[in-house]
Amino acid sequence: MDEFKSLKEKWANQKFDKQYTVEELNGFLQKKSKTSIKWIFYLSVAEFFLYISFPFIIPNYYESFDYYKSLNLFEFSIATSIIGYIILVYYMLRFFKNYKRISVTDSVKGHLSTILNTRRAVNQYIYFNLGILLIFLIVVMFSAFKFDENLIALKQENNSVIMIVFIIGLLVSLIIGVFGLLYYFVYGRFLNPLKKNEKELMNIDN
Image 1: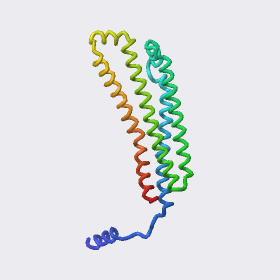
Image 2 (image 1 turned 45 degrees about the vertical axis):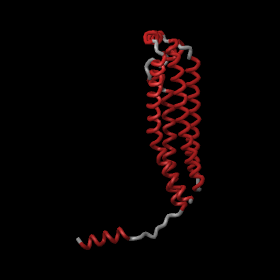
Image 3 (image 1 turned 180 degrees about the vertical axis):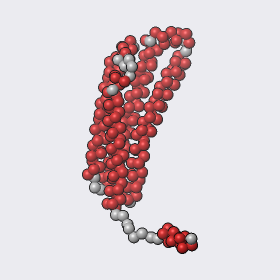
Image 4 (image 1 turned 120 degrees about the vertical axis):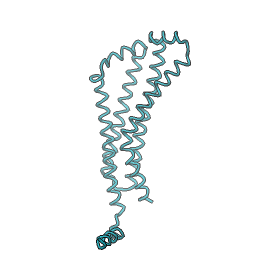
C-alpha cells in the first residue's frame, strides 16, 4: 500500500514537458466555437420552419387575422409578420456566414472577430424579436380595448383607465418575459461557450 501511495504522489507531482503552441490552442478552441455557432444556425433554421408551420399546427390560425380586421389591424399584422420573417432570414444567413467563416479562420484575432460578430448577431436578433413582439402586443391590446365589444363592456363596467393600462402592462410583461427567458435558455446555451472561448483567446492574444 505504501508503494502504491508513493507512485500516486509521484504521478501527481510530475511535470509534463508538452507545451501547446498558440496555433494548437487556437485550433482546439476553433472546433468548440464552430460547434456552438453551428448549433446557433441550426436553431434559427428550426425556428424558421416552426414559424412557417404555424398555419398547420395552430388551430384557427387564420381566424386570428379576422380578429385583427375587426380591430383595423389587418395590414399591421401582415406587415409585422413579414418583418419578422425578414429579420429571421437575415440573421439565419448571418449565422451561416459566421459558421463558414470560422472554418477557414487561422488567426486568433480572426477567431475572436467571428465570435464577437456571432454574439452580437444573436443579441441583436433576440432584441429585435422581443421589440417587434412588444410593439405588436401593445398595439393589439390597446386596439382591442377600443374596438372589441367584450372589452369595451368591461371598460364601461369598471370605468377605470388605470386598471386597463395595468392589465395591458401586466399581460405584455408576462408574454415578453416568457419569450425572453425562452430565447435566453435556448440560445444562451451556445452563447456561453463562445463567451468562454473569447476569454481564452484574449488570454492567448495577450
